[in-house]
Amino acid sequence: MTPLTTGIGPHRLERMFNRFAQLASPGSLGFIGFGLAIFLSTISSNAASAQDKANKSTGSASRSSASDAELARLRADTIEKMKQTRAGTEKLLALHEDEVKKLTAEYRQRQELYNQGLISRAELNQTERARAAAMIRMDEDKRWIAETDIAITEASMRDVLVGLPAMAPGGYSESGTLIRFNGTASWSLADAAKIEKFFSQAFGHVLPITAFGQTPTHDRLRFDHRNAMDVALHPDSNEGRSLLSYLRQAGVPFIAFRSAVPGAATGAHIHIGSPSVRAVAGADSQGVCCKR
Image (cartoon, rainbow, N blue to C red; front, side, top):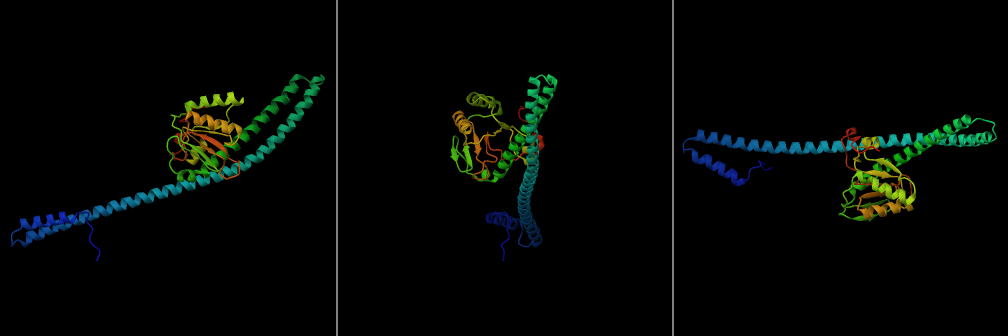
């Protein structure tokens, strides 16, 4: 037989039963029966309470598992849509690159005609403005593709990051796909200006930041990126190595992604700040960070 589980220890059960027995006279069977009924009712109540707690625990675990599964499905759908949009943007980029080439050739021809006095300055400026607008469209395509590759890489590597062992303060590790540093400095996006200044002084151009704080893409992926920024530099490049060295000296935490696939450069970047693998509730987090 399966023993009855009540949640009450055996010594307590014995004391309760003996108390009812002492209160009853030898001939008061009715009173003993009444006490026994209360005794059994107590056992039943405790057993029901224990079962209710077990059911609640099981229900909570089931809801948590279902929530995690739904979040994983949502991220997978988002990544797939991002890949499809990226493919379309690549085609658009090719068209914009052709447009820039044609307008560049046209501008040079018109510049010769202008130098010869055959066309007006206004005609030359018109071509120059059209070429500049086409170059802006081309650069926006390239930037969007880079941002998408970085977001896909971080999303694809999320499970890997979650499964990595905790790193001690000041700890550093390196693998074929990741470089991690758990800096001890009190980092915030307000310190980004120092990093940008170092980089521009060292290399003569601006730091290629692709994501500063929370972005709509991170909202869709449910990633907490509110106190982090992504830099489109390969960590093994000259500029990437210099930036990582600066961050380590300053104690700023980072994760450098060589890529999600060993040997491939797509999506390679440097994530400055803590990992963004924690989930956020949704688009409410948008706009929490500083605006650039």
